[in-house]
Amino acid sequence: MKKLILTTLLSISCFIGQSQQAPPEKPDGYFSNFTLKIAYALGRLDLVETEFPLPENITEYKDIVYNTIESTDLKLDIYHKANTDKPMPLLIFIHGGAWKKGDKHDYWPYLIPFAEKGYITATIQYRFSGIAKYPAQLNDVSSAVKWLQDNAEQFHIDPNKIVLIGGSAGGHLAMMAGYTNLSLKIKGVVNLYGPADLTIDYARETPSVIKLIGKSYEEAPELYKQASPISFINKHIPPTLIFQGMLDEIVPYDQSDNLDKKIKEAGAISYYHKLKGWPHTMDASVEVNKYCTYYMYEFFEKYIPKN
Image 1: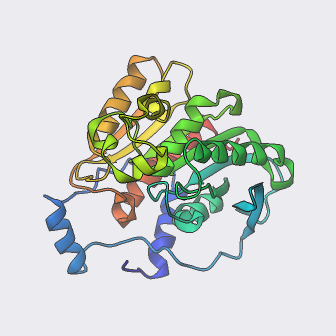
Image 2 (image 1 turned 90 degrees about the horizontal axis):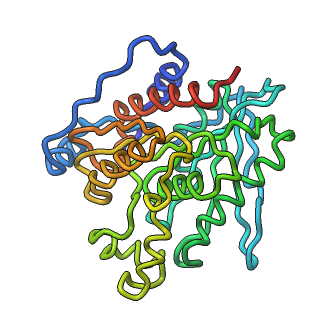
Image 3 (image 1 turned 90 degrees about the vertical axis):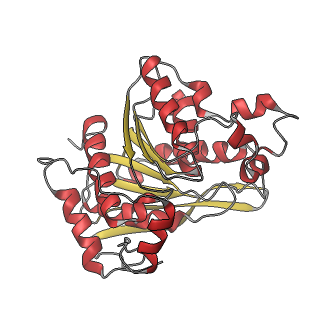
């Protein structure tokens, strides 16, 4: 992946810190995935910096073990401003990777800028589908949230102001935890192109979904339903912010179309940003990342304000 100079990331961080005066327009996308790949090959697609030093004003708690299951240590990282001295809202990031791979470090470009803005940010591990089948992944996310709530005072966390954020498989898990475990009192969910319904044809035939469940749809249709966020929508679920690209070949955009529709029909709150001409993991683009960051910040300030 192409790396930009550090000033690119700093511009994103400054963008977060700006007052929300002029909402950004949706970034221009591409005609097709083919033209997008050409732009990438020619170096015309600017991508966010994913590796940069920890700023001096940020305190890091690295690889904290929040649970151990069958000799497997599950870890999380926490970040906040060095001068934090009172409880602040918590943003928990859940990485993607088709439930079978990925790294909690993947959300570094969000973790640090939002920590610099004054939030407590955390990123968590969960068991992959090659190790344990669903609902192990959901149980791990819920366990991590509970651990952070139980240890809130130590890390300056306001346990009553928590939002879950995830991309792809992480978006699926963020929705599942937010929609099914209301005792966690999650105040919001941010779903970046995550699958909402595993019972439709595309999902039934997707190898990563079958591996997650451990059985085919024909063998266990109820398990697929129970692993679908859309099955648990009601008026009591937390507000949801959705980002979806229309060129997504991994999670079709009608997944997010239907999710938004069902949430609103249930009387719950949904904000849906559908971006024409962008693929899966679209927020790796600098312009899309800025757009998503702006509306994420707006969402956080509305539902878990810092003061």
